[in-house]
Amino acid sequence: MAGYECVEAYATPHKNKQHGAGPSSFGSLVPSAFPPRTDRNVVMSFQMVDQDGNGFIDDKELQKALSSCRHNFNLRTVHLLMYLFTGTNTRVIGPQEFVSVYCGLQTWRALFDKFDRDRSGKIDASELREALQSLGYPQSPIIVELLVFKFDKSQSKKKAIGYDNFIECCLIVKGLSEKFKEMEIPCTGLATFKYETFMLTVLPFLIA
Image: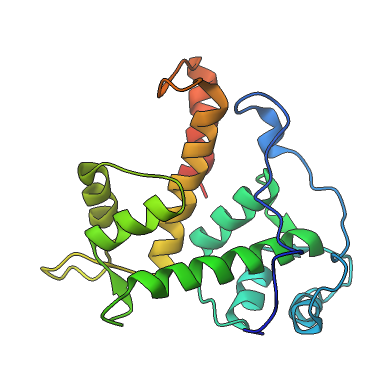
């Protein structure tokens, strides 16, 4: 499936129409169909795990489908993918969202490989900072150091993160950045949140 062209089928992560976070984050997903010209192998990966044929797959089924595409993730990362690409916490996705997830991961896999210059299967703080910058989410050195400290699971002296944790890190940075931008006073880097709005913005990323 590596040769599948995702440009036309790829949809950006779902954004709720409400301004800021709100109850819609816990809404239901509308049934969908595969976009035109979706690669047959991608369709088969979805249908293989959609055992009841209802057009939706849950978190464990998505985890299994992605593993068949050489994307092996823990359930927390799968939950974050589902939240970012559906805008809900129902933890089910349909064909259109599955294609978006698949194509998004193809892009992020290529990005990870680009900055994994020594081919160690990990990227360090400086490489992570470059990767986030290229995604349009520049971070200060201290933020990047905190991210690496959080997502490095090796406990080695040289802090670095693997692909699974890189994806989880990017999903959180991307999701929180986009939520912030929804509330930002234009071009100021400042935003005002009500307490409940703040909690509804952050909690989906904590409970994934």
